[in-house]
Length: 212
Image 1: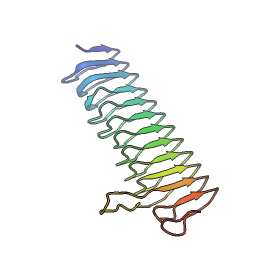
Image 2 (image 1 turned 90 degrees about the horizontal axis):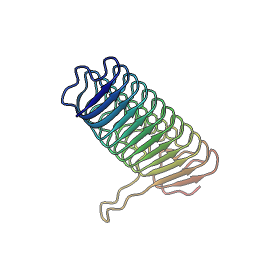
Image 3 (image 1 turned 45 degrees about the horizontal axis):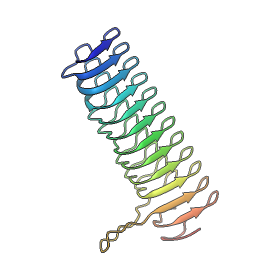
Image 4 (image 1 turned 180 degrees about the horizontal axis):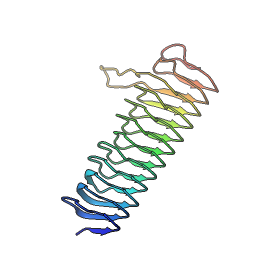
């Protein structure tokens, strides 16, 4: 059975199974929410096809689609997520419109518009804000990897580390191995070169496979 508490909570909800919706309009017009908890005004409003997830915060998970085994805590956290699986979003706008699996987004605007950011961690305000193709990566720091496309297999640590980096780390067909990029320090950058390491404030790569 399901539980609804609050004005308009669960109103017009369809195919609700073990759904708990508490708060004004929580779960309003939702469809196919199973074993899910919605806490706060408008949380899970218009959400659909979500399983074993928690949405806590104003409009958290509202309009989300096909999110499973995930947690969304904060104002607008995961509001427009698409297929956010086995992931955690903590902070205002965290994972606002992201598509990611097995990832963690912690901080204001963390991973807000990230896509294909699977098996990754974004920790810090605006970290991975609009990162794309950033799987198997870690972005730690204010604005770390904020607008980085194709920064897969990377570790960016520091404020503005890899801020707009576009780097495709090589994949060797022969042995199946993959390269990686490591940036440690504020304002560090791969400069678009893959398989490198840069350590120190403002340090940049100048060639593929470089150590700076």
